[in-house]
Length: 382
Image (cartoon, rainbow, N blue to C red; front, side, top):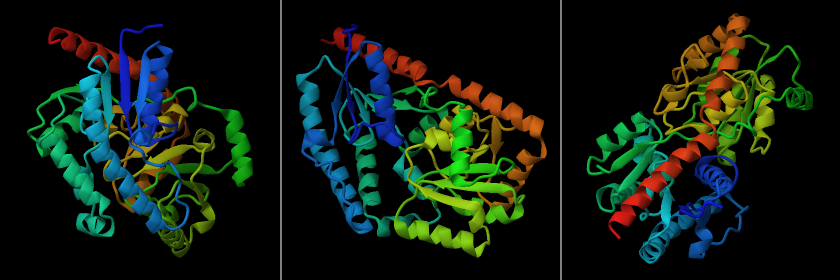
C-alpha cells in the first residue's frame, strides 16, 4: 500500500451520486484504489444528525440552513485545530469549511445568485443564500485559501474578477465522470423504454436537475409544441412540491403533458440516460455540470448553454449543440438534431469519446499530483 500521503476530505456528506458529496465520494474511491489513506471530515464529526426530515418543505429547508451554518462555523473551528495537530495530512475542503490545504471551488454563490433574474427575491424567500454570500466573502477576503482548485479557466477568471484578494495558487482540475457506471447500455435502453411506455420510434430528450427554474426547464417545455410530435421529454429530479406542481401545470397549459414524464428523484440515472437520445440543460449558471459529462458518457449529445466550464467539454456541432435560454432556440436545436440522423450518430460516438478523457481515474491523479506538491512544500518549511 502507498502510505506516502494521507488525505482528509471535508464535505457535509460524502456519498455516491451527484453534487459536491458525489465528487468527494468519487475521489475517495480512486484514492483508495491507488493505496492512498483517505479520511473523512463530515457533518457527523461536528455532531450533526443525518436524520432525514420528511414533513414539510419548510422544515427541510430549515434543517438544511441549520446544518450548513453549524458545519461551516463549528466545522471550521474543529478543522483549524485538526490542521494544527495533524500537519502531515493533506486537507481537501469541498465548499463549506474554511481551513485546509486546498479549497475545491464548486462554484461561486455570488455569481450564481446574481446571474438569476431575481436575486433579491431568492434571498428573501430563502435566507440560506444570505449566509452563503457572507461565508463566501469571508473565505475569499479574510481566510483566503493558499491553494484553490477551479474546474476551468472560466471559473478561475470569474473567481479573481469577483474576489481579487483571492490571489492564491490556482490549479485547473476539471470534474470527472464514472465512465463505467455511465456507459452505453442497449439492454437498459430497451427495458426502461418499455417500462415508461416509450415507443421505439420516439425521440427522447432527458433533463436532470433539482432547480427547475435555474436550469431552464421552462424553455424546454415551451419549445415542445414546436418540435415533432414524436419527441418525448423525461424530467428527472425536482425541488419542492410546489415547484414541481407549477411546472406540471405549465406542461398541461402548453398541451404537452402527455409527451412529458416527470419522474421525480431517481437512482437509475444511467439507465434513464440510455433510454434517451439527447441530454438538455438550458441553465443560467453552473461551475461544472457533471451531469452533462455523465450523459455524454452514455453516448448522448448534449444541448447546453455555453456558461462557465461547459465549453471546456462541449464542442458545438461535434458532441452536442450550444443553446440559448429561449424556447425558440431550444426548439430549433432539437429540430436540427432530428434533421440529420448521420450527424446525430457521429455526435453520439464523439460524446462518449470526449467523456472518456474525464474519467475519475485520470482526474484523481491530478489531485494526487497537487497533494504531493503540497507535501513537498510542507517538508521544506517543517
